[in-house]
Amino acid sequence: MPTLSEIRTGIATNLGTISGLRTSAYVPDEPKPPIAIIFPENISFDTAFGRGLDTYTFTVQVIVSKISDRNAQSNLDGYCNPSGASSIKAALESDKTLGGLGQDLRVTEARDYRAATINENTYLTVTFAVTVYA
Amino acid sequence: MAKYVLTDPVIVFAGSTITSSCASVTINLSADDVETTAFGAAGGYRTRIGGLKSGTVDFEMHQDFGASGIDSLFFPNLGGTVAVSVVPGGTAAVSATNPQFSFDVLVTEYSPVDGAVGDLATTSVSLPITGEVTRGTGA
Image (cartoon, rainbow over all chains, first blue to last red; front, side):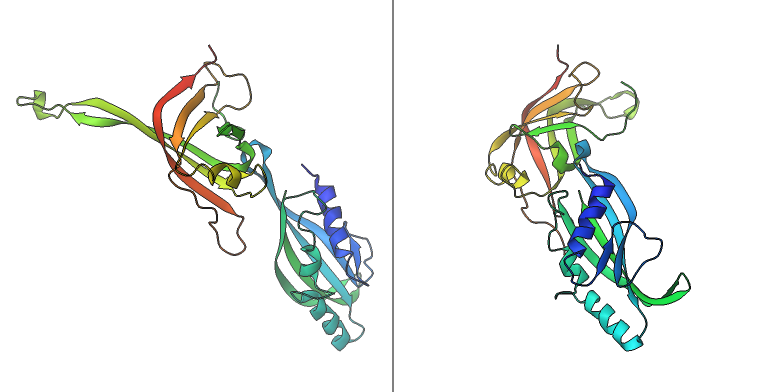
């Protein structure tokens, strides 16, 4: 079965297909937008007998610069689209096995579209919920 | 064997181990209740004896249409009789304290698709046992 680190890296690899978006499997000290950061949220072990399946939930936080409100929102909107070149959902689900690591993957929602202050800078962020069956 | 948490039973269906695709297994065994109450029963109470035995086995499974997945075992066997064995205690050698329950089932139902949008694809069956149930102890 895959390790947590392998799954995080697999998610980052899928996100890396979006042009211009930095990805980080781990939380960076100083995020440089636009960036998608992967946070493990929950692991449900033993959803099948014999270590047959674990269910992981991750959040992917996308951070964009807020130099211009309109441009920032436009960029974030693109990441929230259900399909298209900038779509987080489409990129993550482009390889639902994460290179053969898991069984399936689904992006279930985008939430908390809002401004956030990080290291005294204000950004726009949105958070995606990702379920991985592995 | 002490009390234990059920995480690793060995479940074999039609010759294939389906353990890692199962989320739940239940073997239900019962005996018919045959009443023998006669006039003058002591204290006015009914009396009974055990009749014919029967059973069912229930599986909750994660659906898989792979070459040797769940669908490949259930779809072709619908309407047929299939051998099943369950070792609740896991992969340790079958023994008096790690028994193996073996029996045949009649595959009377199968739902290839059973779920709503966004759900993990699962399928559940409740199959009647045909014939005797043996409790193997490796002896």
